[in-house]
Amino acid sequence: MAYFNGPIQVLIEQLSQLPGIGAKSAQRLAFYIIAQPEEKATRLAESILSARQNVRYCTECCTLTDGDMCPVCADQKRDHGTIMVVETPRDLAAYEKTGKYKGVYHVLHGAISPMLGVGPNDIRLKELMKRLASEEIREVIVATNSSLEGETTAMYISKLIKPSGIRTTRIASGVPVGGDLENIDEVTLLRALDGRTVL
Amino acid sequence: MAYFNGPIQVLIEQLSQLPGIGAKSAQRLAFYIIAQPEEKATRLAESILSARQNVRYCTECCTLTDGDMCPVCADQKRDHGTIMVVETPRDLAAYEKTGKYKGVYHVLHGAISPMLGVGPNDIRLKELMKRLASEEIREVIVATNSSLEGETTAMYISKLIKPSGIRTTRIASGVPVGGDLENIDEVTLLRALDGRTVL
Image (tube, rainbow over all chains, first blue to last red; front, side, top):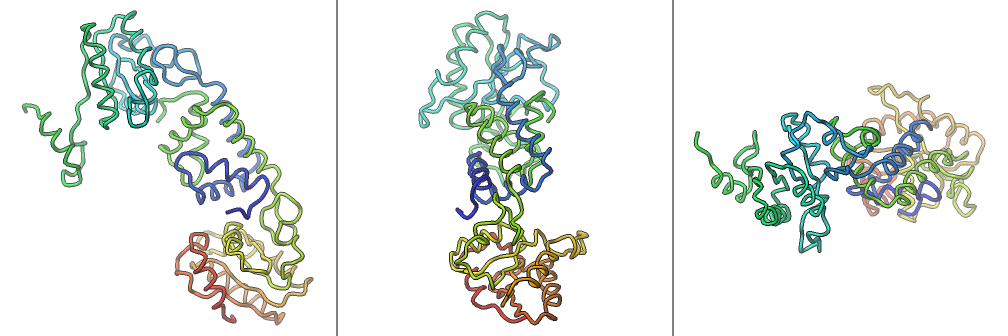
């Protein structure tokens, strides 16, 4: 892939370091960028710099934001007594898109994974416990992924919170709405069965 | 998807304008970039600017390069009497990777497509004809894709060149019909080159 030289090759290399972008995609993206009007390429480059330089962690919930506080935490109409714990800002965005959740969030930036060497101190758990101690929290909803790491993290959090007596819940796992039963893995099917509710 | 605001949202929007990058991928890429050390994000942004600003069309073959002339055209050891006509710089790169082709190239930057409203004047055909008139060319190898557009372009070129008496060949259809040149393995590319026939 070493035919291209100078700035083209540098750009291809930089792009191929992004997650999910292979050598072929990086090449396609590079040529697309080069073929754009100069102001479009400049806007892309500047948006990268601006985002990297201006984005910080929310002082409350640790999500990424460009102010001191994210729009959710700054919103006084939200229920600040209910905290949903998620792994990433993207998970937060997914629940915000529903428009129905009225509480606030806490973003862990990861999940406990002994396999990957990620321990409780490597994610934003201390910040969560600090919030629980100083704020008046009625409920903590643990919405980590239903992967091995997510479940481990959920268990860990529930044990951590138990002594404080704060109600701790876990989002239901089961068959996704609109999903065909035949395409769903057995673990999910069994969990959906375990979690069945009276109609 | 409008939860994120300010610089994050701007970056996500910019990234999602790239080809093959949907809203989800753009979000993932944006958060990856933000989580990088600042100098890494800066390097990415600068590589975009540098590529866009410094890359020009080769004065000979019209491929993209950072000098006046691309490495192939500048190389006196290449056979400048044989021109391979390709659609994109990526196709040129694909043949260069084989390391076996000793001639030079001409990059059309597209193919004739009545459907998409791309006519002969929208690709670098005039530049090719100028080269044929002024240089001593023994053979033109038409290596446009074996898609409808590529074949149309090949036919058009062969008719255009015929009066000059220059030998015009087409790479063999060892290349699977409907395939993009850049995705094809080197052996197939070479076999297609060996099996070229007079148009």
